[in-house]
Image 1 (cartoon, rainbow, N blue to C red):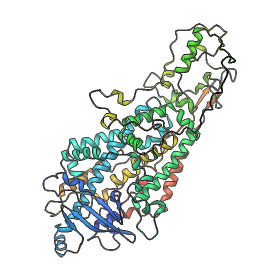
Image 2 (image 1 turned 135 degrees about the horizontal axis):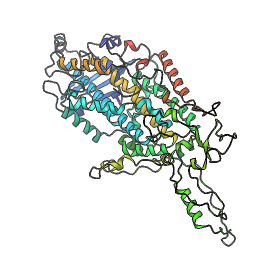
Image 3 (image 1 turned 60 degrees about the vertical axis):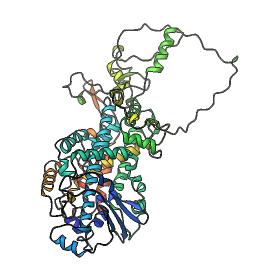
Image 4 (image 1 turned 90 degrees about the horizontal axis):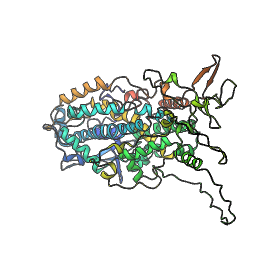
Length: 610
């Protein structure tokens, strides 16, 4: 994780104009993670925290709230107005306030500035870091992914998300217990009692529900009217929204990684996404159980794109009924068997991707990897052991493979004129059911006494086609989740230590009388960061473990010959992503991380697993 040990040193290095004793807030909005809360308002930039004013602080601390206006001044933002507790400050030349500040007492506009900074810190830690990432996004998406792909542990989308969702559920459970049950949030999240913090989270979810589409960095700036100050639109010599630019650059690298991954695993064909039943089931569960995803489907049709069916079947030719050939009579048993074959056989992602079947041993102590056999259906839909070209192998080369007892029951393909073979009582192999059946959606397990998601959110019907996942929607979803679970989580969580360790310039807790620095919350947060936040976890630039990627599985037979499956090479996608991420160090917006308020590239963790 990012060290943050330099405290206010980073902020002071940014103060090239020697204005730190005056416009601290302007410097923070120019070049720190707190600028994520900016919005464009006519010719000004606005931070509005007035909604915090209705929440009562812990006795002895100043109330949260306030508003601030900023104006562009060259390559930085300058504070032009502060509003706090009914007072407005347009001038920041106050001799009395300056004298009190030198005596370690905040008064006048300086008190208002400190309270607004504390409110920004509270919004970042309580609403963005905890509520959005650790409650509404990472653990919810992690739970649905684990549930939907429980029977497909090697599914390519599950493997793609694995590093970005790892341990999210466990981390969230621990966080909630620490911050609220043990009331540590009163020392580290905001100067509000736990009851007020929970009320703030509840009201935020109710009045301003999260739309996942609006967190997409390709849309994030436009939603706030800030698109002209970032990315390809930023003008030279003008203020550049560095925080968003960094996140956008990383998200675009992640999108290239996703494109490569999909191409390697699906052959770049959208039809494979449509026919991947496990993936479609995962998306259905995501819509039914993650409110932020469902709201995106309801409100953002350009992000959750309804499936476009461009291929229209030709109209049926008109045939004179008298001239039409009449079907031959079929035996009842054969007709029933054919009907069953067309209604019960379902495609699954294993057959779609031509991956080898996975047989899980009944003995839990047996290593699944060592028992994975290179078996499956050949091009003629015959079960048996396959060679590298997908042909059956046996004692006579490309034989029919397997004994009749070892083959799963196949749909009847005999001519109706031939008497059907006698039926057997042998049960369908367990793995066959395992590959073609899915557990019920999570929502069906909720007791009927508890309102389900569609009821609590008005029961709005989703737009037509949004329940059918297509490639564009999949990419939009994955790139957003991956950048927030890794890069943005590092910004608002670990890298925030540079701000938390600097109670003079960026206080989280402002005394009600403005005198001094509250030592208890400062000591508590320092202990929290140095004990269980700054520990070693997987990072984006670490050597990745092999189970994230596809493998070439080999099996020896006849003590001499070996048959292997093909490796689709999706590890190359991640390796290329890492190389391009390292190359960003030459970009001025990513350079000199040791001197600023942003995390270094080699310290960003893969998931929100704190």
